[in-house]
Image (tube, rainbow, N blue to C red; front, side, top):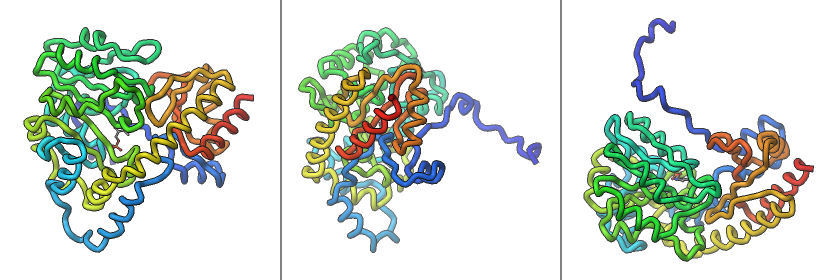
Length: 367
Ligand SMILES: *Cc1c(COP(=O)(O)O)cnc(C)c1O
C-alpha cells in the first residue's frame, strides 16, 4: 500500500510541530471515568459567552443557508467604531490563529528571518516554518520580562517580522508602551511588527498599550485581537487584525472569500458592544487572580504576576507528575513542557468555585 504513495509533502513541513491543545473535558471524563472535571487549560472565559452574542446567534439561525458576507462589512464597521479605527484598517479572520497564518502567507519569503520571543505562543513559529522562513528565538529574561534591546540585537538584514505577545502567553508579563514605541522607532521601516494583544482586556497596568494608537499613527504594525478570550467565543472561531490599510490590503489578497462564517460575524458584532459582559469578566478575573496568588503563597509556590487570565506557576522537578495527578483528580491545566519549561504549569483563572476546586486538589496532590 505505502509504495503507492510516493507523493512528497513540502520540505518546509519537516520543521513543523503539531499544536498541542488543552485536553477537552469530555476526553478526561471518558479516559479517567470521572464525572466532575474542571478545565483551566485554554484561557477560556469561565462566565461563558457574552449573552448578547448568544442571543444574536439564535436570532440569525434561520439565515444560515445563505453565504456569509465575504467582506465582513457590518462587523468591520462595528469594530472600527468601537476602536476609533476605519473599516479599511481591519481584517476579520477565522480565529486569530488564521490571522497569523495569513500574515505569514502575505509577507514571508523563504529564508526570511522572523524574530520570536521565547517562551511565547507557538503559532508564530508555525507561520514562519510554513513559509520556509527562519524563526529566531529571543529569550525573555529570568523573570520573563521583555527587553527591547535584546530583540533589536536579533534583527539582521534578513529580518522581515518581529512577533510580540503582550501580555505574553504563557508568562502573563507585558511590554510597557514606551518600550513598544522605542522598538517601533528603532526598527528598520521594512520590518513588520505583529503585536498579539489577545489578553489586552485583562491588563490593569497603567503603562500598557493595546497597540491601536500605533495603527492610527501609521506604524508598520499589525495588532492581533481575538473573540476567544474575554468575549467567550472560542468555539465559534473569530478574531481580527488591525493595521494601516496598505498592510490590510496585502493580507486580504491571501484570504479565502468566506473565511468567517455568518454566525461568528453576528456573535462578534454583539459581543464587542457587550460592555456589561466584558466588565463582569474583568472583575471575576481580577478576584480570581488574587485568590490563586494567595493559595500559591500559602503553598510556598513561586508564580509570575500576570496581566492575563492565566498564571504561570513553578512547581519544581515534579511538575509533570503534579500535572498528571491534578488531571486524575479532575483538574485540567497546561503543562509547561511544550514551552521548554518542564518545572512549570499554566493555570487559567476560573470562577471562584473552579479556583477553589483547583486549590483543593493541588493542596492534596502536593501533600
Ligand atoms: C488564544 C490566543 C490567540 C488566538 O486564539 P484564536 O482562538 O485563534 O482567536 C492568539 N494569541 C494568543 C497569544 C492566544 O493565547
